[in-house]
Amino acid sequence: MSATPLTLQPRPAIDPSVDHAIQAIVAGASTDATCTTDLAVGPWDFDTRPGYGPGSSMGDVIPTGAPRQGELPQRYRDASDDDLDARIRAAKETLGDRVVVLGHFYQREEVVRHADYVGDSFQLANAAKDRPEAEAIVFCGVHFMAETADLLSHPEQAVILPNLAAGCSMADMADIDQIEECWEQLADVLGDLETPDAEGLVPVIPVTYMNSSAAIKGFVGRHGGIVCTSSNARTVLEWAFARGRRVLFFPDQHLGRNTAKAMGVPLEQMPMWNPRKPLGGSSDAEIVESRVILWHGFCSVHRRFTVDQIDRARADHPGVRVIVHPECPMDVVDAADEAGSTDIIRKAIAAATEPTTFAIGTEINLVQRLAAQYPQHEIFCLDPVVCPCSTMYRIHPGYLAWVLESLVDGTVVNRITVPADVAEPATVALERMLAAKPNGAVK
Ligand code: SF4
Image (tube, rainbow, N blue to C red):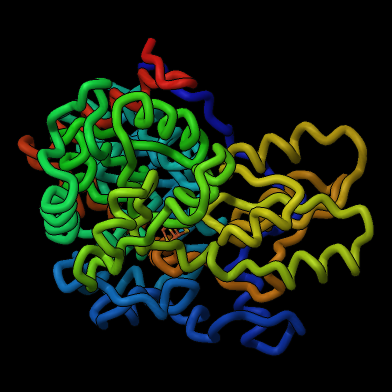
């Protein structure tokens, strides 16, 4: 597997910090709006409470088995921003090449400025693989990303998630028990799911988005399925249709629907699977006729974007270029000028040679950073309310300082380890994705 090229740290000319924007709104120093003033409070205030904390995911239900962080030592909770910044720098200096810090595109600026690499989840997992000399990989993202880094890194490397409560509400919308139950119900209707028909096609191929637990990637690997990212979803669906009559796509219904629709799959052949209903809420005939069965999952950050916001952007900014993430609902993707992954959005802006106005439909931290990095363009978030991904926002600099200073003291805290019996099939599913080529071929 070859590493994806990574984004080196941009040094913005102006402060793009969403955290500072929220603090200013709460203090009355800004007339902008935020989705909740609780965002101005330290995330440790929410670590022991049920729920994802304030922000875009706060309305979602957290699974009972989700990891809890526990108390961050008081000295980190009391430290000033400047103190934490200095302590992180000092710890990194002391650790040198023994540690690599990875920062997701959606991470807050106060953390991202300390990252050795910035990228999307898959780029960062590959970065972990390319630093075999690092004993510890500190992943400033969310739980499934740290699991993927553990799958792709060397066994002796420790992958650390600074705050264990940094999950992903979308990934948590599909748990392994629900997926196993769904698979059994599909077999009741479609027959043996592992046996190909006369044309060599099995009844259903499971496809999971990268934003899912290692247990689900393992399920997919065991059942002839494959992982996809938002960059390669079409190629992966082509791979799946070359091997199966239909696809079971989870957990993000919007990425599945947007991708399959663009490939010409009719909406009436894409039933939704609601795990709380028998046969997901469909009839036997609807399952038999289906081409893509969409899991009832979504990203609460990208679900905030609406067609009204696009209409307003076009009215206020004639000539604006609207680019949205494919996790947005179908009507939003249809109304936008372009849709693509975080990396595609970033590259589209980087490639614009003339000053351009961009309205972007993705997480606010990335949009703010792009606006600071490309001052020749006007770049703004389609959603006028400052509302970050609440799970990502749990990685406060206090946790980063804590895990790094613990490493300096010789202690690994918050290590994420995927059990071997899950890791093996999950890696198979990832390797199928890496080998998949357009039109269903393999390398
Ligand atoms: S932006 Fe959405 S999909 Fe990404 S980590 Fe946050 S909740 Fe999960």
